[in-house]
Image 1: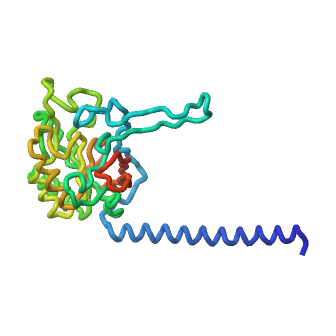
Image 2 (image 1 turned 45 degrees about the horizontal axis):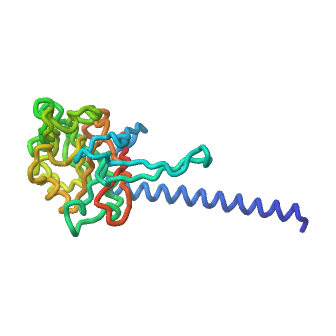
Length: 271
């Protein structure tokens, strides 16, 4: 057989196998998608709109303790090295980030151990902007969950229930973190609400503030009950005002470092 014929035959075989793999990959993706949808029938039928719920952050982004949450050290520069690399020092609970069960439970799951199916959730947005405008430490309480259910239907099992307090718009202002006299002040969840959400089977809660508990909390009751129950939380969410109360699906790009108590995450919603 001539050399050219051998090359042609090899090309033909490669193309045939490529088509086969493409078909197999497409079938595999369809099967995974079908499996995910059957596991979570309440996931949104997407219209294609994606909303980024993640704040971009640097050392100036507000943190609970007031210290910079991320530090940059330049290791290589375009001039003279021809490329750029930063060495980063990142504190787990800064920026838009995950609180894993291990954060408040010694035997809780680390962020690397969160179940993948719990990182893709029907999203329920509970709007408390009205009362948060009057009280910087306003809370999502049991009656707010009841009112949401009355207006929108049941909280889907495996849902992410997010508090929209309007605080996301305050990032960059001192009032995002504290009162003029320096006291921590921002909305959060009440234990009455999260106990109800535990019974409803919610997978996680999210807030557009620095903490799952309100700023004036003295006992971190939500952290000490929600996380040890095997659930997780998301803090410092952005752009919740761009989403409906129900009908969106949230995709939580959680970090996966072993023994992690949490960490910065990219969180996206699809409607």
